[in-house]
Structure formats: structure tokens, C-alpha cells
View 1 (tube, rainbow, N blue to C red):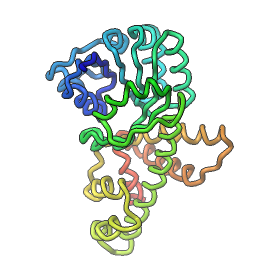
View 2 (cartoon, rainbow, N blue to C red):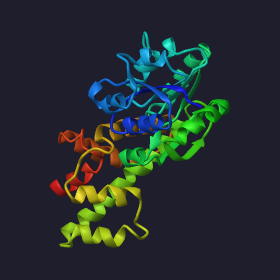
View 3 (spheres, rainbow, N blue to C red):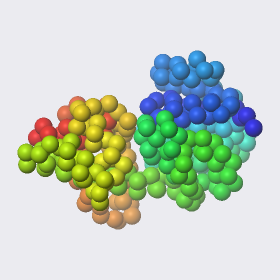
Amino acid sequence: MSLSIAFIGTGVMGRSMAGHLQKAGHTLHVYNRTKEKAAALIEAGAKWHDTAGSAAAEADVVFTIVGFPTDVEATYLGKGGVVERAKPGALLIDMTTSSPALAVKVAAAAKARGLSSLDAPVSGGDLGAKEARLVIMVGGDADAFARAKPLFELMGKNIALHGGPGAGQFCKMANQIAVAVGMVSWCEALAFAKKAGLDPAAVHGSISGGAAGGWAMTNLAPRALADNYAPGFYVKHILKDLRIALESAAEMKLELPGLVCAKKLYDQVAARGWEDCGTQALYRLYTSL
């Protein structure tokens, strides 16, 4: 069944995700702050809109994947925004990594207007988005999840409902904690190897297939070793996520020293002017110390 879908946020990941929906035969309405980033979708038949609210007004389902919680709040709850302009009965799905508390706030506003909503942040980076094998972590109503799942399956492989509004964001925070602390581990391992006079690439070849291996070690370490810091996921966005995770942990009175360390290191990366680089720029910090 072909649906009218609004897709708001066609950046590094969003344009690939929207493209999968488009290729499946759905009618696409797109908005992005920089129109050029939606050019390929528009050329393939998507209709451009000048505001997020205008795109939402045409859609049965609205997807958003924007930068920061402030962007989510403005997109959904601002004057002329998605909640105000969405069609009756529309399903709203925010795939931004954002605040669990904000997800609850958006869900309440949507419900008050007779709309369904889900928070559904993703993991897998630019490669996972391109290859339609994202991990999708969902919070919200079970009926809304069932309605969305066929669309999620066009973008991801590991899809799960974790609870009510905000649960998807809490799951994503757990993911980002593991990601950030894991990034520190492989950066330190390869920096150690280099300082010991070994070839870091050769060491990577030995340790990435064993107990030290993982997604970031496999996919991001080779980029860093090749001095490729193009963003699959921005430093400025991992910092945003780590701030949210630390705030959530503080509210729960939970101490996470590994997360504190990772946040401190990424603050140093940003202070060097590398916040628009990919998260693998952490290795660059180690080699420049």
C-alpha cells in the first residue's frame, strides 16, 4: 500500500532512509534546512516543501531525523509545526536521538490532537542507513508500532519496541554509552600500538577479529588510520547524546565514570575545531597529544 510520507531531515543518514521509502513506492514530501541535501530525492520525484509543517500537512506518516533536541521541539511543537499541521490520524515518528523527556512531551501533544507518535532513534551510521540495516529502538504505543513496522523494515533489520513514550530514547542512550566508551577503547589500543613502534593497521588486522572486535573497530578505525575523518556520525552529535545520557544518569542517581571520561575526551576533540568531523576523530586527538 502506497502511503503519503513526509520526511524531514535529509542529511547524512536521512537522505538514505528517505530514499528506501521512496524506492518502495511511497509518495515522498521532503523538507530540510539545506535544500541541496534533498536534491537527489527531489530529482527522483519527491515534492519539496518550504517548512516542516507544510510537508506534514500532506502526509499519512511523518518521519523526522534532525540534529538536536531544540530542533525536535521546534519542528514538532513550534508555531506551524508538525503537531499543529499534521492531518487527523497521522502517525508521527521522530528518529532523532533526543531527550526522553522531550519524547514524552511530543507524545502528549500529539495525543491531544488525535495523532499517534513514536520515538524511534537509530544506530548504524551512514553505512547502516545506506544499506537499510539500521538498528531502530522504539518507544510508544503498540498499535502505532505495528502500523510503523513495515516502514521501519525498509530502513532497518533490528527493530524493537522497548516501552511507552521515551523508551526508544532511553535505549538509544544505552547504545551511545556503549559506543562512546568503546570508541575510547580502540583509540587507546591503536595509539598504544603506534607508540610501541608497531604498525597500527597491522595491529588492527590482528585484534579486530578477536575479543577486542566490534562495529566501531571494524568500520571506523580503518577510516581513522587512513586520516579519513568524514562524518558518518558527527562529533557534535555524539557530544549532544553524551550530554543527554549524563543528564539522564544524574536524574537516576547513577554514576557512569566511563561515560564521564568519554565526554571529557570528546570535549577536547570539539575544542580542537573538529566537531564537524566523524566520531573517529577521537583517534586524531590521541595521535596529536
